[in-house]
Structure formats: C-alpha cells, structure tokens
Image: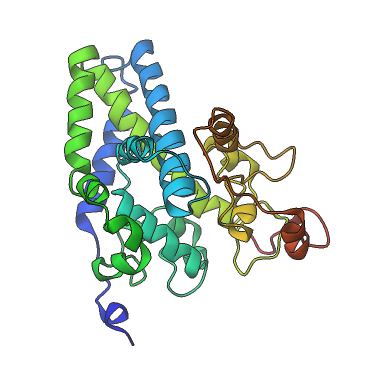
Length: 292
C-alpha cells in the first residue's frame, strides 16, 4: 500500500457547506426581490464564459489533454475564466481529471460510477473518499501546471477572484446581478459539469471500445457544450473534437475550429479514421447494459 492509499478517507465539510450555501442562494435568485431579466441574461452569459470557455475549452480540452495550443497569454486568460467557475484551481482540476482517466470507473477513480449515480455526480466531492485527489498526488498528475507560478496563483486565489467578480456585479447591477451572476450561474455550471461524471457514465450509447462505462449522452452534450459525447472522449482523450459523428453536436469543437481558422489555435489534434476503426464497436450505438 502506498503512502497516498494509506491516508484516511476524510469528509470535506468545507466543500459540503459551501455547496449547500451556493445552492440555497441559487434558489433565492428566483425570488421577485432578486429576479430581473438583465440579471438573468448576465447569469446565462457568465455560464457560457466560465463553463463553456473556461471549463470545457480551457480546463478540459486545453490544459488537461492539450488537444490544441493557443498563445500563452490567451491560455492564461482562459484559465482565469475557468477559475471563476469555482471548481478548483487549474492544477487541482487537471490533476483530478487525469487521475480519473487513469482509473476510469475502477479503484482509484475519484468519482467511480459503480459507487452510484449520486456518488459520481456530487457525493465524491465531500463524503469520505480514499480515491479523491490528495495534495501529495498533485505533482504526479499535473507536473506541467504546478511548475507554472500563474496556475499556482489561480489555485490559491480562486475564492478571492470570485469575491472580486461578485463585487463588480454588485456595483454594476446590485444584488440581483450577484445572485444570478454568481450563485445561480455556479449551481448550473456545477451540475452540467457533474452530469458528465454521472449521466455520461451511466446512460446513452457507446460507439467505441473502452474499459469503462463512458457513454455518449446527447442531452448532456447539449448542456455541457459537447462534453456529453463521453465515450468518444474516453476512446480518444487527446482529441479536440468530441462529437465525432455529423449528428453529435459539439459546441466546443466549433469554437476550436473558429480559433483554428483565425490562426489562433494550432496543433489541433483529432483521431484518424484508422484509429477510430480499430476501436469502433461492431454495431453503432450499442447501449449500456444495466444502466444505473
């Protein structure tokens, strides 16, 4: 047993309390005193910016899998935007996700779906979890990011940056902008991200042979900017494109294509036809057996 495995599996009370508070405030955002259409649209815009650009394009496809490259100043800006999604700093997020890929749906996976849908969706974040990323594992899984002072800065200051965003929203639009631009937006972004871990590992169809329960789930793909084509992703983690069929709509891939056309994105990686043929299942769209 390694030193990491021997560490006690402790509950994360800070995360649990923070998630409860954010969700309570997200519900309060619907009260007439806090609701306004300008505030609602601010929340939607920030949901796209922090979730679609920051997490999906930035944290996931750019920083975790390096499926494409962009100029370093723009990469830093995208990472900053991702930090405002309050899902952890880029070092922690990337290390956790790389660990998930190394142990997907098996011992060592921080959110193994075999422990239940709710576990994979949210409980893994705060309940006792021996497979959750420990501090002494970070260098192993995110050595490239932890060497960069800017990414360490974002990790240390994610809460401060969120408070700064909330203050700016308050000064511009008052409390309604805060409740929709921070709390409602965070709750929505959280669940859309978590659905990739839960729904896209338990329902949908598989196009490629993998050693896990990753699924292509169309409605998760719509909510999470293409991340729901998860079986495709687990078959080819390096790919900047997750929707590999014409009908698998992938908003993030369209964004990357625009960046490539503008000569901003380079070294864009996608699987070849030969790669796909080697892993393709005999029948297109085989469904999972015993979905959770």
